[in-house]
Image (cartoon, rainbow, N blue to C red; front, side, top):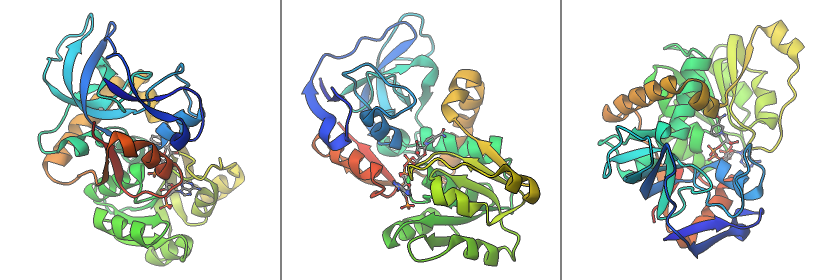
Length: 327
Ligand SMILES: NC(=O)c1ccc[n+]([C@@H]2O[C@H](COP(=O)([O-])OP(=O)(O)OC[C@H]3O[C@@H](n4cnc5c(N)ncnc54)[C@H](OP(=O)(O)O)[C@@H]3O)[C@@H](O)[C@H]2O)c1
């Protein structure tokens, strides 16, 4: 089979190589899937660079989420039938940037019939993260105002749709006019181009000085620091990631005097600690997809030849919506 593999860590465009390799064998508790579509995520770039939380043994194939067709199941796997159309996370080193990938059986979910393969491939990490951030961590209520950073990006675009589906008002922050148009198309009520506007002033004006009830922050750095200037009384800032490359060091005295909460979210940990909550979230996301309330915005379909450059552009903040690889 064909696979994009990383033999040494470095920039995605330099280290992702298209190769002919063996189809992996599913071990106990694993499922072999024929990849129909694999969405590109920021962690794919971090994996290439050797800077992700986990470092798979070299050589490995990145690609952390996918939609595929079950080809074979390993020992001890029950209730997952060959031929089933599924989505979920790939088990690295046999990731989804390949013709075939391995999945852990507990991370395999039915793909909603209402979504195409490339959309279904994008319904897992970003939407699950958005769901857990807004509902489980922040306890979002209808009518609240949500500030979403990188609102045209991977997790941000999911958060915009999920916050709207929950009856919230959404302010999306983006970098540049193309991303602004994307955030508007996703349903954001107000969009702020961070290159030309100050989101703090916009949020304050929109809320009559009150501020945002929930902040969804996959960027960190200045985005986090400025968010503390426009978070509401009893607001909740959910820390999702640090795409800016800068991990904030919050002043806890500020959280104390303004009565706001800083909430961490590592969605992957729920897969280990509360898999039933992940399955429950998948059911809710499937309902929302079937009702047309969420629909992953697939902006580019990439072939194997274009994939390395696509991962690089995502890492550099030069993409909108979801980039999806189709073998
Ligand atoms: N906590 C979790 O469980 C979890 C789960 C999934 C992902 N994440 C994290 O969430 C973050 C976003 O991932 P993603 O796949 O959704 O990526 P993405 O949003 O598609 O790309 C990152 C976006 O961040 C913004 N950005 C601002 N400053 C940037 C900079 N200096 N360099 C690059 N980007 C910059 C850019 O949007 P604008 O130009 O529009 O501002 C860029 O498009 C990553 O840190 C990822 O690791 C966390």
